[in-house]
Length: 451
Image (tube, rainbow, N blue to C red; front, side, top):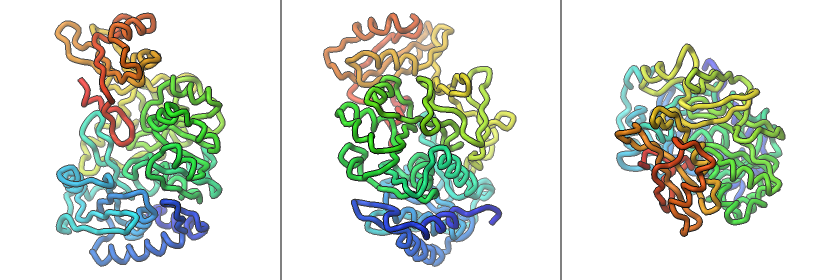
């Protein structure tokens, strides 16, 4: 191997850990137990013929056994392609076929099951050209999911950079309620804390009772979690944590202010499946309103003429598995084009929205986030999402989908509320009240299901 293998680093960390490496359903498992299971699984995988360069699908539950599976695969120098825990049918078949996986490993609290899903055979040149530690599929909120390959180097660098930024260490316990098939739950969460010598407490749901019972020091969650805690008057459960981070979806300024009014600090960060975390709020450093942080160590940012954020970083992915042309097209003169529109002031980054989500109406550019913020400022609104809908006169018009807290709230009243807050071209031409906004498992609004 030409670089440090994650298995080696994690083995060192877990060998030195105590009896509370991972707590699951209130029961602790030690590093020694994880490593013993990893050795058993390594022999099992070898018996199946899994070896260097192979891609293995992993449907990982929040259990210590999932960490053991990853260590065992990395000891075999194989790559884990992460899929949702309950994935099945065409969804699962398409993703396993896309990465050339012959086996699927499912984990649960009860054990580990290995299923052969295809014959072991030489893979296509496009697949063989990329080897790494993890393959993580993008969320697909603005297009078809892509298979993103990360190396041992990019993941270990991410662990080191975020660990130093947030001072993660052996005394930390992460309250973990995120899925393990995304960067947030797997690289930032599980590997990020275990890789710094800390412990993880898996919980079934990130609600007030389970967060309290986990007795953690660190919490990573999506804005929806903090929104629900605020609505239930339960933000106080965050107080014992020395670090609370929001990510994976935009944090509404009103919610951030509500958390601040409760005397709590909610850190933000920004990243992508392809880049891991490139922008973050340092520990104990106040950030200007609406910003998500500033460039982390090893990351360089550039803003294109159209406002798109371009990134170079030490945590960059290796490429899209089997899609060399798409990989090449994603870079501009060596800079990765994120597709996100930003404003940067004194190094602090404000995300304005996705380039693909920009609404152009009558020649004017409308950032959905600005309209959503104005709508959400009405006390009768729980949340809102704005999209552009085709229109023969204007090209597109602004349409708002709104979840009401006050069911007496009318479209006319809401339009009147935003009138002084928005320019005429930004104001919604239609307001459609819905019971809930469509979201993926990481809390991002799936705008393709609106409009």
